[in-house]
Image 1: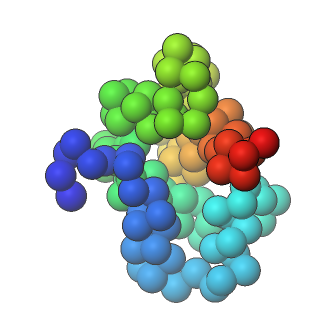
Image 2: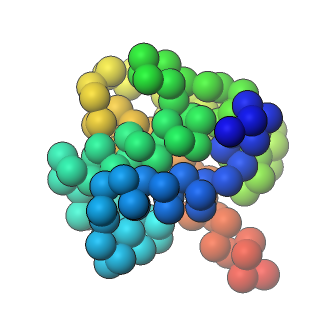
Length: 122
């Protein structure tokens, strides 16, 4: 994937990781729609795949600030994007799979969830 496209095609990352992890459709839709109550170690690793394929996080568990800020600014005011990045990546313990899932959940709750209302014209 072109580095300039990282974070732009989250749907492609969802689909690649769904195939890699053989995630059933109900679980897949739950994660896409922000249902974090289904969290398990397996789902955390699916989230890890998703966050890495989208370019938000590297294999060494470091974050790609520019990618996250640019992505988040598609859903909320650009001036608020950096604060979402800071909120979602500050004080995150580097734990395989769990770290990525926590960051995904935070980004979803602070930016992506607003996309549904924007997408539906509300």
